[in-house]
Image (cartoon, rainbow, N blue to C red; front, side, top):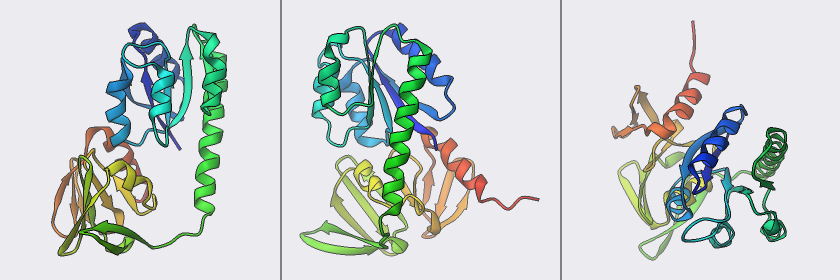
Length: 238
C-alpha cells in the first residue's frame, strides 16, 4: 500500500532533494509540495495525506507550530538543519527527525518506520468490528444512513452533500473528514470534490464515472491513477 506524502519546505533545493529520495522508495507517492505551511494547510484539510516531510524554519509559521495546530495530523518526519529542536519534535509524536543534509540510508530508515506505523494503524482499524451504517446530523435531526444506500458524496468547502437515490442530505463536515470515516473497501475518493460508492457505479470511462442515478462525475487528475489501478485489479481479462 502506497503512502501518500507531501513536502513542506521553503527551500527549493531541499524540496528537489527530497523528491529524489522519495522517488527511490516504491511505497511512497508524492502528491504535493509546498513552500510554506499555510499553503499546505488547505491541501491537508481536503486530501488524504499519510505522511508529510516537514521543515521547521519557514516564513509565517514554523513547522513545529504548524504541527501543533493540526488535529489528526498525518504521520510526520521532520527535516531540518537545526538538531536542537529534536526533543520538542518527538514530544509531538513525530515518526523521525532528519537533519540536513539527509543521507539516503537515514532517509530509508525513517520511511520504513513510517510504513510500519501506517500498516499497524490500518491493521487495527480492519480488526475493528465493521458496521454497515452511519449517523449524520442534518436539519437538526440525526439521520441513519446505510452505507449501501449512499450513491456518492459531494464536498462543498465545510459541507458535504450525501446522495441517496432520490434524496440528498447536507451536513456540516469537510470531505476529508467523512472520507476517513467511510469503509475504504466500499467508497473511493475520485476527485477533490467527490467520493463514489464503488457498488453504485454504472459505467467508467477514462475521465468520468457514471453513478447508478445517472450522475456523471469527473475523475480528478491526482486521484486518477489510484482509481484506475483499483478498477484494473477487478477487471475480467482475456
